[in-house]
Length: 383
Ligand code: FES
Image 1: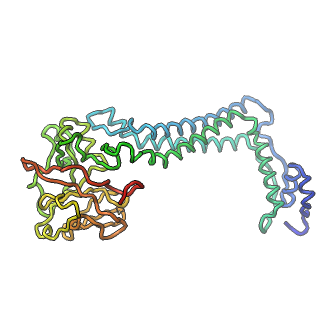
Image 2 (image 1 turned 90 degrees about the vertical axis):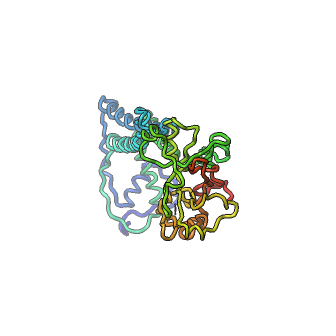
């Protein structure tokens, strides 16, 4: 504000002013002169105006529908469950899950943006004004006048009388807000205390027998489900690994024999992968076992979950020379000779060990599920 410009009114004068006076005063104090507000629709309720209104409402409504579709995609995960490739339509639906999330959320955001831009272009008057540059921080009077300015702009935008646009824009913003809230909330929906003996709880994995006494074999992933069904799944025997070797194994429960869907699901379930390590005899002689897990190995064979105890990445790297298991995410390292306890990096708990043995025919089998929850910590676990 220049020294020659209009002087700010006193507090009493300010309190007496109505919105138009404040608007005008604000312009004067900022050196702004509003020339005019060309009316976008000089003749109200023309067909062109109604068409523009319907166009804006269409984009807001599309945004609301797309946001709703996003919530539906997230809320019904069983629609998208993995189906093996022999189930053509089921597998196609499964492979559409990620695209469906992206398309619905993207369409919701894009449509909302287009609706807002169109409304601004079609209905908000473009004021013609001349403004002088002013320096310094905003004074109280400036804040009061800018509020008046915004209120005036809102009033002139005619939003108050356009209930169709208000409703569709409100629905769009509301549903989109719901969709955004659904993302973080979805991960809290699983209740770890609900049926803790169930194999789908956080306390168990696919290595849990379906019924007491069921044998669970260690199975390799051959990459072909057809081979599995034709020739029988590839089960591992004691002689299958060389000393110093490592193989990723998955559970094969006898009750799932011939069930293609269950056999395929066992290979994709996130808590199933286990590293089967055969130590070299000289290394095996140096092993330190964890208290209570002294019989979890079979000879030189040790089986550890592949799910990192830090935040759950796959710890896929086994370094034979040092007997270290490495997690590529944050470089945690676990000592395979020391019940896979962490020796470097951010992980603080050992990798869970799967108890294994061999059956009468020489096949490696699990002696039960892990004795603790695998993977990252959660509130209810004790260690
Ligand atoms: S997830 Fe393995 S180190 Fe972080």
